[in-house]
Image (tube, rainbow, N blue to C red):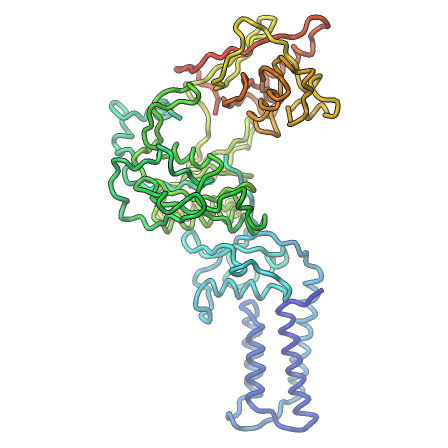
Length: 581
């Protein structure tokens, strides 16, 4: 195993002492002060803040031996030298033992420091951070271009993020000034009628939006997958100048020139250091290293928060009306932190750090993951600092459920919002051959199935798959799992999960199926999503899914199971409200 940088310096220091000892004792020649200064220089290059106490005591020891006038010659007394060498050898053995037992695999850690603990010898905090990291690394370590630091933080707290071996991260706990060492986690990104449904009208008797001037001149930071600036929801027509308090920037990049920002979209940044530190250099032929949104999630959430009025608006003819965000006169700042590999904590914290410094009023993020203690939760930590700075923080409750303990972003200083009920739905019910109606939802906008015709139903998991496909793959309607001779001209029942919901319909279409019923499993419960499908299709809950599978399984030879899908458009005033997202 290669010696660490610290160990190498120790060896150099030991060799220098031995050389001086040989010079003094073998040739019987006195040693000048210049030799002692060389030793002191080598000694200083090794010791870091962790070893300050030892550093001071050894410096005093050296000073006692070398404290003669500058030009006066002297000899180095052998006994203290032997004691010092013994101490150095002991330290060297400990370092080697530590290295031999430490795993090499590195992961990203977020390190919080005491701002006032920076030794005065370092001109900046960044110099201090780099020096601390380099003292823990071995001589063969390779750092990314630009140095070992992924991000530095100075607004939400003082600290940095870096890739470290677990042993190095553990060693940081004993470094003076280090407050916390937090392992990084990877998270995932989690309507026209919402304001009216919530009672937030623009006129009396409930005119909260009007009273707030529709969020005029507030700056809302959206931490997500970026933004598509050309959307009509982000037009700046009729808006006044950018608020004077705004200190942010519009960072340009591929497909996102600086001119993408305007008086509505006042700023945009992207943070990919944590993602690339873990996943390697970004494939820029597949992703855009800029604030441009290639996923759609960030654009969607930004328009929900502060989109301008857009009319007419609909989805394939469904939910016609005027679309707007909750604060249509507010300004937006987009902070892109989510990539194909997920949303990395170190990047999320960097976005929080920038948003606080930029002068935002609100932070909104629809990103979540597993619940951990607050002191290990990057979102909770960033949100706490933002709240201390007078910024309102809103976060999504996640896409989990319907079981218990599935809510995320639960810190009490965060307003956690769950996608839940509305008084509007998009019914697309399943009518079975025995006359039963199973409720479903869809926003399919293409040609309908033939009216008054019942189609044969087939469950892909028990008779619709190819000979090469296992029942599990075909039940999920995965790519290439369906046998065209078994599903052609039929409505195929597919289980929810693994591949995207709408993609299952494309698999069915390519195999010759005329329609699809997407059935929830027990872990999906009754939560439904009304999707835009490529063929006539609907989604049903777990209870309806069980009934549907049993109906198909109980069919007798010569009397195949049949059914159709009844698309009923947009329905308003639904009571009690459902649980559709």
